Length: 96
Image (cartoon, rainbow, N blue to C red; front, side, top):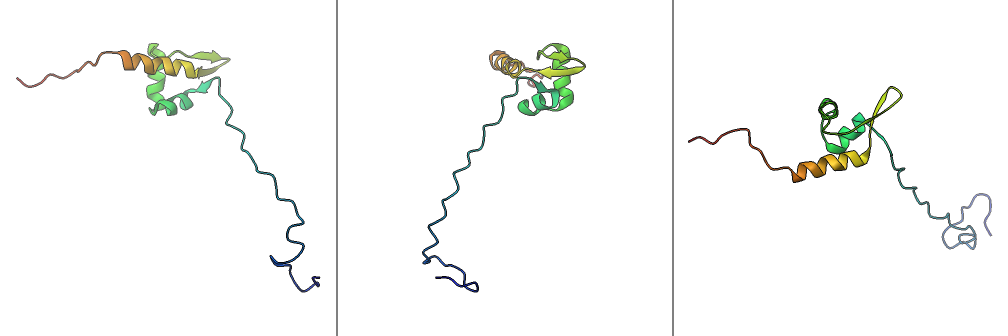
């Protein structure tokens, strides 16, 4: 038996009386249907200004929601797929 001044130790009869807490499972991150321009740029690992240039030239599709510009994740995948299938073009010439 434990008195007020003693603390129960591991060998105490009371150590196994408390049920263990259930394992906490973190909910998966919610899937974003629309990304901000900054989020889209971060996914491509480019700057926000470059992302706006891609949108303005039509290289990446976007939608407006009220006054907000948003990018669908699928449009980023389409853009990357086009980059992968495009031929490599070099803008410099080798010295003769």
